[in-house]
Structures are given as structure tokens and as C-alpha cells.
Image 1 (tube, one colour):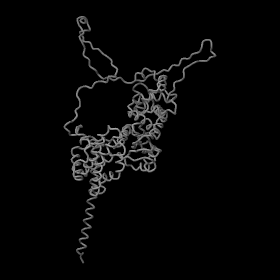
Image 2 (spheres, helix red, strand yellow):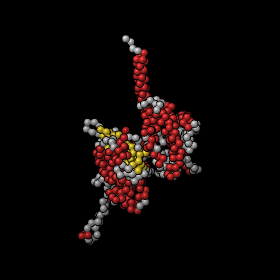
Image 3 (cartoon, helix red, strand yellow):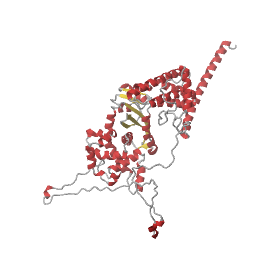
Image 4 (tube, helix red, strand yellow):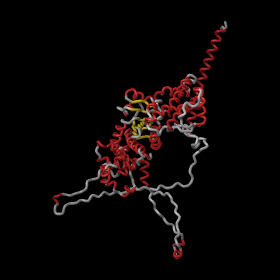
Length: 539
């Protein structure tokens, strides 16, 4: 007996539901494959920065705002549409219209002509005389002027044998009075052939210029000096041990910061069978310190240990490794709009219209932030809040509406879900004008390790990773305070052996310029024979 009409209709509905479900699943797979393909294409052929045409983004944004509010843009305080949002290491802002490739009519042009050479460089004058003034005809020639052209030339650095001579003296006729001799100069690495200048050069070359020790060994060999890699490694180890006390003091001082930005990146650690994975963390404490840390695992223990006892704002991505920190420590989470923006940018390949609309909202936030950046903190807090609140309200209404319409677990759904779930942290910047919209500063600092990783591939051990974190903390902090890392490390290595431990924080890059104005520091440096060498003084 055949099925009834109702049963046939029920079966057809089941088949239709299964077909719709399969269609949605295949659509999700297609969107995910499109995103991965686009990432691969950008990695191989294109720029990694998340550039979006500001004109198209503004059109999509204005259309949605008119639908939501029946008016134009939600705020008149926003900066012009071609204002650029800050970019993260993987991209965080749209290219302005007048930037190269931005498509604007007011494109900036590269100035023509030769670059002027820096005035501080030493000048050596070479006169080229014509043949007519080199022989007997010179008496008939009168000098009426000259033409001068300048060339930038290079002279290779060189090693110096620095002999520190300590003459011995005794009083005439009084041998029982004993022999008088100057004290031995303190060395950062006892019983070492290396002076502070060479030690600083090795450290900056390895951790600032990313030259592994085996490359430095070959460079020095070409200059006629054999320094075994094991010797260089011993110097690095000893310097890291001495400088570790200073970095420890900087870490304690960082706990008084108003806001600390934190992020992490992976690194390979050499092991017997195969390399294992470790992680470098970076903490940027206001405009005071940049601190790097190493942990064998990427879990919640690292951030809890680094920030134990800290009370203030912590800006990070939405990683689960920070959840325990927010629960157990007295810190306030600050979200990152660059990470939020990246999710919508990645969803453009599968849902361009919705992604462009979201990017338009976020672009408005960055434009307002840029327009108010020069205001005093209290004034900026008020102005930025009044200007961004309408944008945030409209954006949240759009997110709530679209969350019901998008395909679950699709890329655009993931981006919308991220923004809605992180909304409290993302809007934390409204509380204080000193808070940033993005965590790009910590991502930019992590580039030091990412670039180094391409050169040295892996760290030799956990100890080697700790040395790395110590030295890079000082080099990065020097860049933060516009200090020459070589000159700074040389002087710090001279001062540290005899410097009072209870005043070690005075040697941090944050306080270095102030410390050099101190009579005590100047006298200690002037009394050190390491600063008397002509090559050192010339540098």
C-alpha cells in the first residue's frame, strides 16, 4: 500500500531540510576555503596589511547608518573619511586616499634630488688639481674658486688592542712603605679579553641586528681576529646575568604603570630529538619600559606570574590564557579593535557587504581617536566618549541585527560574535583618554623576536631564551626612549659592577638621561679607563 499524501509531504519536507542543511554546510566549507586561499595569496603575492578602499568602505557604512537611524553619519565629530587607522603587524588600518596605492588624487610624491648628508659626520677634504697646475705652467694660473661635491663613504670598524698600564711606585729610601699601584678596573666579565665596548657590540649585533654568533664569528675572522663561538656565547651569558638585575628592577617598576599591553609569539627551542616549542611574551608598560619574558608553555601561568600584584589596565587580545589573570588579579581588561577589525577583514572574501559595513564603523572609531590624540587626557576622555558613543551604539545595533541573519559558524558570524562577546573590553577605552583602541604597540615590539627568528631559527636552550629576553628588553626600551643601544649598553656594563644595588633602577633606559646628569654617574664613567680609549671617545 502506498504512502498517504501527508506522509509524502512529510518526506519531502525532510529531504528539503536535509538539502538545505547540506547546502549550508558546503557554503561554510566554501567560505573557509576562500579565506584560507586569500590568506595564502596575500602571504605569497601581496601585502599582508589590511588595506581597504576608504571610498567603498564609507559608502557601505553610510548606507547602513541611514537604514538604522534615518540620518547620515552618527557623529559630526569624526575625522574625514580618509583618516587612517593604526596598523598592526598583520595590518590594522585602511590606507588613506593620498597614500601610495590609496587611489586618491592628492597622492604624496617622493622628493627628487640627492639627499643631504648629515652635518654631524666628520669631514675629510680631498683636492683634485688639474694637470695644468702640476707643472711649470702653475705660475701662470690663478685660483678663482672651487666646486665641491660630497660622497658618503664607509670605513670598516676595527678591533683595538687596549693596553691598561698600571705603573708601580715606591717612596725613595722607604721601601718598607710598600708599593703603590692603581686599582684594577672593574670588568663586567671577569678574566675576559673583551672590553665593555666589544661586549655591547656583540649584544647589539646578536639581539638588535639579529646576527647569530656563528655569523659574527665569521665576520671577526675576516678582520683577522679569531673569537670562537663558544667564547662569544660565554660573554653573552655573563652579560645577561649582570644585566638581569637591572631588568628585574625594571619589571618591578612596571607594576606601577597605568596600562600594560601584553602579547606573545612562539619560538623553537633546540632539543635532543627535535625542537620543542616555547614562547616569548612582551609587556609594554605605558611609555616607560618594554619587557620580554620567556616561558616553555603558552598557558595562564605566564601572565599571572608576570603581573602578580599589578593593579591597573591590561590590554591584550581575547586569548583564553588571560582569563585567569582577569579573575584572580586586580586588573581591568582592555580589548583591541585591531584584532576585531582583522576578523571582519578576513570575512570580506565570503561576505563583502557586511564586512565593509563593519569596517566602516571601526574606521570611524579610529578616525575620532586620531582627531583627539593631542588633547589632554581628561579632555580627551570627554571628547572621545561623546564622539564615539553614537558610533558604538549604531554598531552594536547593527551587530545584534545581523547576528540573527548570518549563517552560523561562517566567517562573518565569527567576526560578529567576537565583537559582541568582547564588547565590554572593546569599549573600555571610553573610561580613560590614556587608553588605546588597539594593542598594536605590543605586536610591533614582538616583531623584534619574529625578525630574529628568521635568522637564528631557534634558541639553543631555555637559558638562551632567558638571555634573549633580558637583552632584548633593554634594546627595545632604548628604542622607546630614543637611546643608542650600543652606547647605552657599553656605559651600563661599565657602571653596573660597582653600582649600588639599591639604585640599580637609575640605570634603566627610562631614567638614563636623568642619570647621566648626576654627578656620581659622570664621575664613575670618567674614572673608568674604558672611556679613555681614543676609539671609544670617537664613537
